[in-house]
Figure 1 (cartoon, rainbow, N blue to C red):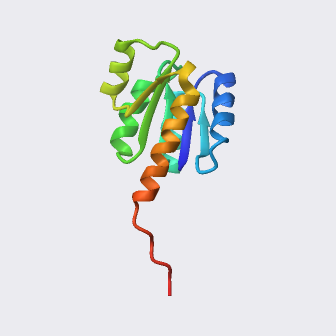
Figure 2: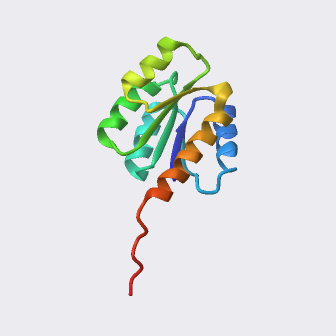
Length: 131
């Protein structure tokens, strides 16, 4: 699965890229510093998954999710934040996020995304090979 990520923290963005590299079927095709860059990356790469921090400069993650969900309805939208409160989670889901996790739960969340990917792939009909 092709993934784009967005976080204004260079440190967290790099840690997330490193964590995703543990799953060979998950490939990071773009890393953004803000919601505007994320939207552009989604438009240019058509990822399977877009992961974004909620609070970022220029365009925040929630605004980016709203736009991406309209332009790329098949993209799985994942929101994350250091704030893990019910109102923040509800805000993310209302904006169009399919999944929300707290940054301190990154590894568990990635494992869940990967497991869902394996299930999805096992349920797809095999493509016919050219004769």
